[in-house]
Amino acid sequence: MNLYQIARAVLGKPSLFVADLSLIRCRHTKHWNPKWKKERREKVIKVDLSDFEEKHDDNSEIAKERKRQKMKEKGIYPQKPWQEKPLYLSCTGSIFEPYVPPEGDGKFSAMSTSGAKQSMQFIQKKTTSYRAVKKIKKYEEEFNVHDFTDQVNDIYRNAHEALANKEKDKLTDYVTEKLYPEMLYHLENKIIKWKFIGSLEPTRVVHARCTNLVTNDNHFAQVTARLHTQQTLAIYDRFGRLMSGSEILTKDVLEYVVLEKHLSNQYGRWRLHAKIIPSWAPARPAIPKTFVLNNEL
Image 1 (cartoon, rainbow, N blue to C red):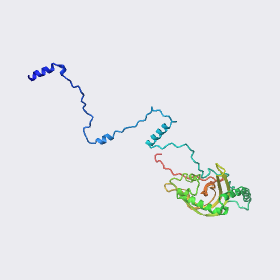
Image 2 (tube, rainbow, N blue to C red):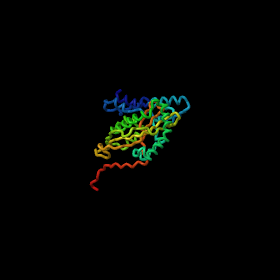
Image 3 (cartoon, rainbow, N blue to C red):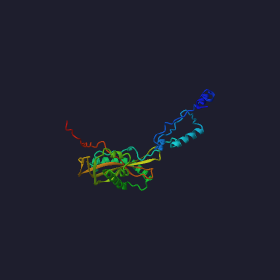
Image 4 (cartoon, rainbow, N blue to C red):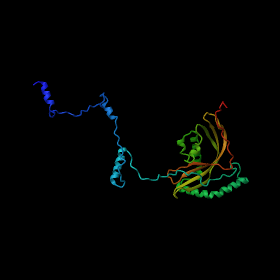
């Protein structure tokens, strides 16, 4: 029996013929370059999507524990109960019961009519100041009005020297937070030359007041001192040109400065708080400004 007869006998019987219909998958997604296999695998990141359809019960302990775990995974700190921030008052915002300088101070003699009138008004206001001084001595036992004038001169001189040298950190030791921005106002790119020559009259305390803020045991004290001195002041602009004053010309300066101290603070100290400018004082001349001229006009 030859091969032809065998094939005819098999094909003539369908039951002996079995067809293999299994699928053979050919992988065509494999990269042709086997290099950088690790890098290609790491560039695909699995993102953990939030399940918005999941129902959370805030009152249950399971939901709180799940929420704590989620926050811990993401590095989020737990929420803290809401609390008010503590309020710290290092100084007052203004002058309480400001001293009114008498008109013509520094010009009238005590023997004249105007000078005698000023002396009488000073005696009338002295009673209230005396009570304030007694209140200050309760917190500062060594406080003395006559010895305090030397401290006023040192604070006044150190504050203006720090301002002229633009030592901002040192300036905060001698002025309050209320006076600090006022002294630095419009001083950018300017040069200040200030020098203290001497005192024409001894510095004296003319006014003292005490008050409390927020609570009855939070006391502040303000002392007004009269300074009659000689100074030199020169202000230069950013180009080095003189704007006001002179380094050679000496001027007599009469000032009423207010010093403040937080009495209730154990580490409180006397600092410059404000300067009293009376209403009868003449207006100061405006400082000339520097401009760039446009040649096209």
